[in-house]
Image (cartoon, rainbow, N blue to C red; front, side, top):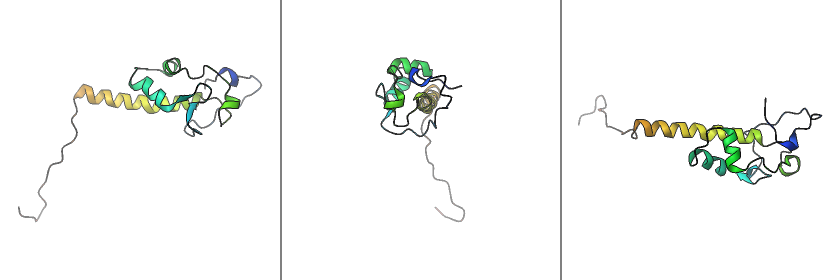
Length: 117
């Protein structure tokens, strides 16, 4: 079940939100002028762990009028979730690297068969 903003929850309108990966332009949330970098910062710098925390930290979906502001004419929630998933995965990877003190892989020269040094 997908969440919708208040302007997109007309019970007479049973349409589903579109493809979250196909963001039409500069903003993720056009009504509140929230960009992907705002979502990234909420996760990587401010520690957001849920979509709801990202929405609260960025102000996304606060001024709901997606039908007229979003070029796709639909709720931005699926786009927020897609951006969240992109950066939460990156955050988990960065944390794993930090916790395990993983150094970059060093390249070593291996002898080649038939080649004399």
